[in-house]
Length: 350
Image (cartoon, rainbow, N blue to C red):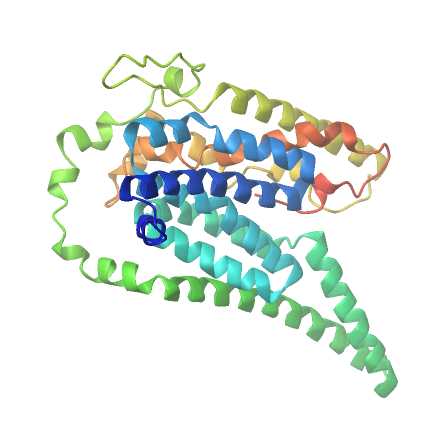
């Protein structure tokens, strides 16, 4: 990516800085697009702000300088947005966006993809099992259309019943097919990078990056540091100490957002007690919440598996649930009383 900016006429050092500016814009744009699909524009601004200003982002950009990982983390919300749009609308534009964003992550940082895979897999599985209402509505419309066409040619109730079940199976199969197509297309676009790396993994000498300073036992984050408030940066220090914290605004916003969702969800249950729709407040962060625990020593057995990155790297995905969890707090007051189809509950998220 630096070479692309360099070929456009920028000096090499300026091109490198342009990549960082581009990454910051990608962070905010991706989270804004994803959160806007779920909660609306105003909560999306809150989510984008908290995601781009997470302490781990600033540490990567200004201190650690791991720009491959910094770029890879920017694709996380874009991938979520693209696949959510693909499964809810089935538009071909989302298919292209899903494949391109997934390939961008693979090209940027392979370790970031390894970190992302469990959360992403759980997210896709959740959307496939519990389709968002927009996808259900489109499927119901397709079913009604087919049933109207069927009534013109078939007069028996048994034939109409079979047609209804066939339409549902076709709808679910099309969603699964689109998901697999986007995944395979993204993997294919980046195969020139990840396929040789995977095929030649036995030629890699891992001993040097699994011992001493790089031993995972030396890279856990204490709970005090993980939930510590921001500290003033010592600009006179050669290697300034910046805590690997989740971020005080992110924690406060996520707490307020979770309380808001629980209150609104309770009110919705009172207004419509017969509704059998899943309640997103209880599901909002299930697949992604473990990323807030894995950097701590409580996850020590997990890192006994091979080829896993240091625990501190898991601080990168951790701002996703906190940023999204803060979004409903900005839009809770905008939900009209008695309205059960409010935007925050239009789709199960995590």
